[in-house]
Length: 103
Image (tube, rainbow, N blue to C red; front, side):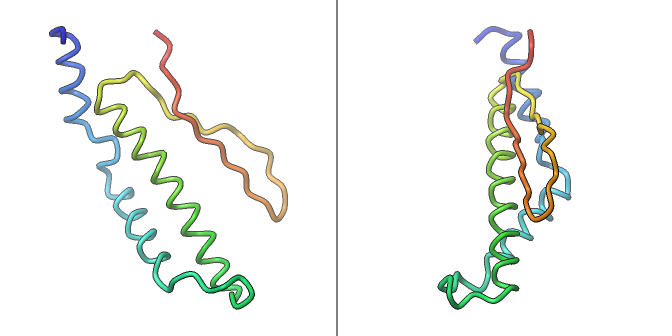
C-alpha cells in the first residue's frame, strides 16, 4: 500500500462515520422494536404491524449505514445518497445508495 493510501485508510478508521450518539439511539430503537416476537399475520394487532414496520425500516437503514461505514473505513471514496422519492399517502419509498465519489 502506498503512503498516501495508508494515510487515507488511517484517517477513515479514525473517523467512525457512525460514531455520533444518534446512531447508537437507532441501534437501541432496533432492539426495542425487535422485542415481542413475530405473531402470525392473522393474529397481529395494529400495534404489532407498526412495531414490525418500524423494526424493518430501522434495521435496513442500519444495514446500509454499516456497509457505508465499512467502506469508508477501508478507505474507499464513497458517499451516501438519499434519492428524493415522491410522497404518496399510505406508502413510503426510500432509496439510499452508496456511490463512488467522482475523482
